[in-house]
Amino acid sequence: MGGCVNKQDLEMVSVTKKYGTTVAVQSISYKFKTDSYTCLLGPSGCGKSSTLRMIAGHESVSEGSIVLGGRDISHLPPAQRGTAMMFQNYALFPHLSVLDNVAFSLKMKGDLKSDRHKSAGEILELVDLTELANRMPDQLSGGQQQRVALARALITRPQVLLLDEPLSALDPFLRIRMRGELRKLQKELGISFIHVTHGQDEALALADDIIVMNNAVIEQAGPARDVFNVPKTRFVAQFMGGHNVIALPDGLFAIRTDAVSITDPNRGSVEGSVTAVEYQGTQVSLSVRITDDQEVVALIPDATFFARPHHPGDRIGLHWDANDQHRLTA
Image 1 (cartoon, rainbow, N blue to C red):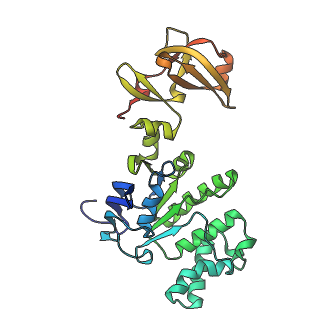
Image 2: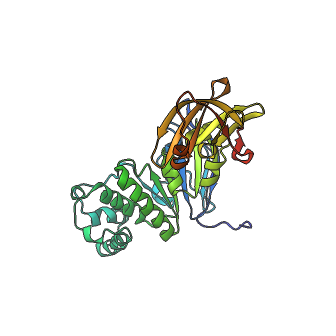
């Protein structure tokens, strides 16, 4: 960017969060790409929600700084940061209509009723809820409530929208549909979305970039495809799924399960005995025990497998291309 700071650049600089003697986030630094969809991904307790809440201003920063558009926002109240947060439980006011729920923050600012209703109406149109403007929250489905919460967060015209596990309360089918809606909305608005999730599928479906957190630090960050295809550590390979972690004579490697093919014993990269066969519809998962009691999983297209099926106890060879094995640093 040649030293020119875009007004929407968000950066964390050596940010730490401590609760007493417990370190929830340990000196993390990361510069979010402007106008992108980023997922903070990791298991419970890894520090991802604390990170999001520090960006929002709902948790204090113990050390370090959070910078948005060249301005240190670390100690500003949430309403003055240029960010907005959509909470996991939606937190709608049960006694207010959809329109008044969405317009609530403008009421707190002292905007005229006509002005705030006009703004709320525009946002409701954006999330396809215009016809439900006069309904009460208890008359809405889970997906509709989520859209209202989204509209309420967007009414302040934030530069960055923060989403804390926004899809966790929805049923699986609705969750998939809402993923598409969130992605579409982010592109239409042209602002940065930062979304906390513990679901790898959700992160891969939504994110331009994924930040994998573990034990209060960033384990790996980068474009979603790179994080999945080229994991740097055992933790990332296993947490993202779809990989074998194998100790070979020259080091520890991650190899995608769908990059492993079956061949005759003595003709593969390794050989072993089939321990389990699981039919998964379009593919078959084959578990194979190789040397040093290591287990390797091969995902085989169903037509390929059933042309020459294997059973537990069979001795087989496993083959993969050297370009498909990625050395792990830890």
